[in-house]
Image (cartoon, rainbow, N blue to C red; front, side):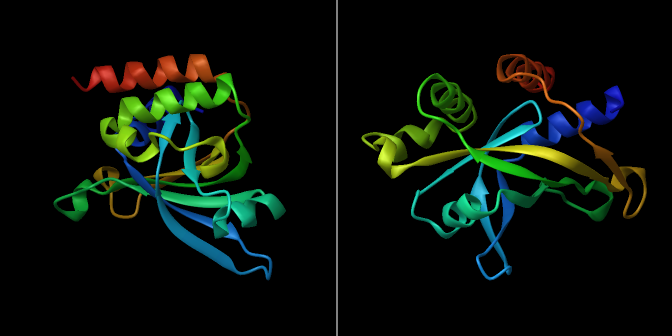
Length: 170
């Protein structure tokens, strides 16, 4: 993946707040919902009830598709991502603590929603992208570049990359 394209992906993930997540239902039908997310490099994290439809779907089939769209004033500013990949539940312990840190950095208001929530109340998932489409109308109407993701950096290195991107915007 080219450096400018990787920087665009990380910047869009850092700037976005919500994504539309599609999972595969037991009957093979797609199930799409909007969720807030945090990211560490190209890995995307979200939380939900372990009893939710999306959690049940992911337990049976880990394939996902998602979109992230950034706000815009006119079509010449449209930017976003379309991603296909795999989701896995984040195991309890240090890994969940690191994901929680990513969420609290991005959403300061989150503490009021998770205070007192036990492990049984929240399932955290990590999405590993396999193919990423970068939509950027600044380069022309409908301009999209697709990249296949071959490997990901570990969470700590990815977090440093995300912090560098968010720090560059200050």
